[in-house]
Image 1 (tube, rainbow, N blue to C red):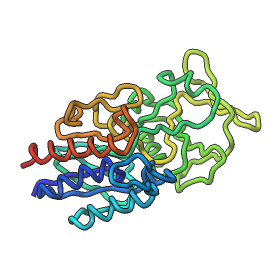
Image 2 (image 1 turned 90 degrees about the vertical axis):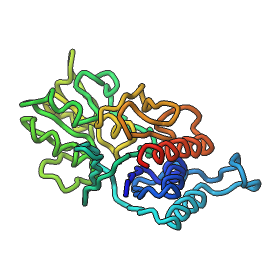
Image 3 (image 1 turned 135 degrees about the horizontal axis):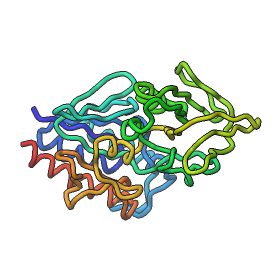
Length: 279
């Protein structure tokens, strides 16, 4: 049976899943990382709820609806995506393969409040180890973050870089063999990144800094597969298909109106197109 993996359990991902499930496409949905919907105290502009509905309640109802149709709902954090003839979705625990992939986990890029990060983007500051590790062969690198996604990025860099240190910026260190928990003040250099300055006044020489806070966002994952992105959003056609065959993006990660109604519409478009392509 053809199968699809959906990364994200919010309105866009669930809407796609409702269609693929009814189209007899085996559907797996990853929910770890939550949804922006959960943070909404009340949704008052959505069809069918004249008194409004809490964001968490609407989210839970969505998950319940796909579970009742037989979706495989997995609460694991997605740390990487790849392609080997099928889409390969990796978590800290397992690998999963699918004929089609839907990115539906939002567009937010977590950027720490550290001086000069924006100034050095593309000149030593990166957001994707798979994309940019090649440029740091034999060089000193640092990953800012402290979760499973940060550990994955660090391990990717270790294959080519001279050294990789994880900087937690004052947060608890994860299970990684080279961590520094000092608070960071700034990233410094001339044309490119040259060093990191800590709150205590000490410095660390580095050639590249990779940002990996929180969980991997939609744009982060799309880049790893070579999908076209436009700034902070993934580029898609009228059916929510990216430039990569059978790779879809829906919801906030595609920009436009950041509303539940738009997310549900995106998911429906993708779900219908997936059925046509896989059946």
